[in-house]
Length: 51
Image (tube, rainbow, N blue to C red):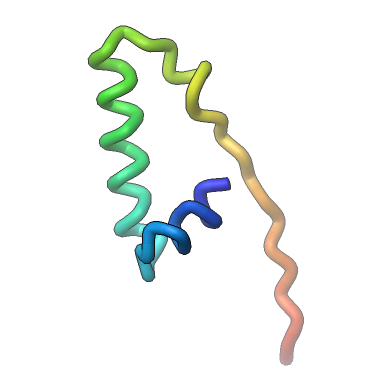
């Protein structure tokens, strides 16, 4: 998952890492690869526990 990769690559904020993902998608497109073969959109439900 991208969130796991974000932590491993030491990006503290998602918005900064999102730019990296977009550049990777662009590189994939520019190399005439099917983006859907390499990137899958996943929505995770985040459970908030608190007051």
